[in-house]
Image (cartoon, rainbow, N blue to C red; front, side, top):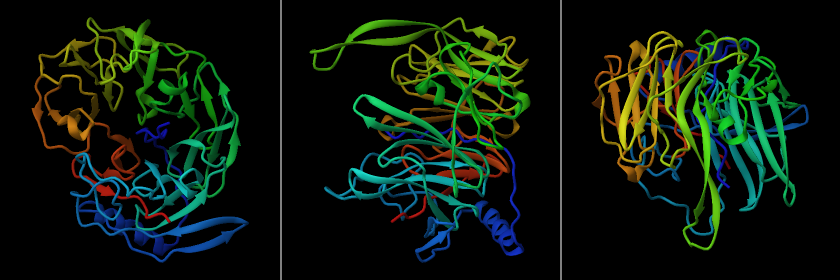
Length: 434
């Protein structure tokens, strides 16, 4: 099964005391990020603290973005690398997941410490200095478990895990850390009528696991709404609390019987109908829903994902998708009460659509995440009335984090792009794990 890592990069603030020298390191790391982030290589060492093993991981040195397949961690990958670059046959390699970002200093990567290809301990690598140095801790899950790791504050993490304890009987658990992954405690999710103020929504999670889920950025407590306002819903993460809770999805679904590629079996395929967005200003207790006059689709896999939502303040909001292979943009300037389609029309075929807002209301749209799909990037600086092509780079899935913006390099790399202004980006590569 695929790794359960996504781009949900959350925010909050809970700064820990650090001595003067650490502050100097942090400031220097931020200064370097305006040009390019580099790392200081350290020798590997194993320490035991309070009975918990931690591994000091080396950092990496970077000179710029460009070149190198994802399987060569000593080189920075292209923003969207071309196909190619695979591990040597039979090679047992420690596998890393998507980097998640608490803020521009606190970054985390899930990785596998493997005895063999199918016998791995799950670990989390953490940095508090923007990737200059890393330290690794074990995750409290079974060997070979599937793990979805999220950061909901600079030093607060949650991990959803699934263990196949018996054939056909998966065991799903939640765990939280409030000290940057050093220690963990089990979490029992609750069902609530509304999320408390300030809780952080997990984007993409509800699409795969059902329901809309949010996390307390102080304690790591987890809660879900009993039912969302739309079918096949996907929430928008990384928004300030006063922006509201935004969801994209469908009014209804239709299931049809489809034959697989071999023609030997059929299965039910569920697709959405009635592309819509919904917003809640009271944590999900009540919703305002708007249905678009045409079916906006944002996924390359049929009707699996409705419009991509882009907003920073919950007042100016964009819904971006495609209709019959042509890009469409809808805009609201009153918090989703009224929507207006823009004149933009651009052929994008069956490409996946992503969109995000940057500084000054700059709308960035990406069509196609795959290197062999000739991905397209566009920007609009006039409220979506026109778009222009821009070079491939981060921005279309960027989210706000304390101090700036962040965008995951997943699935092409386990690194992340960081920016203090949403315009100039620096790549942080993952640690070189054993």
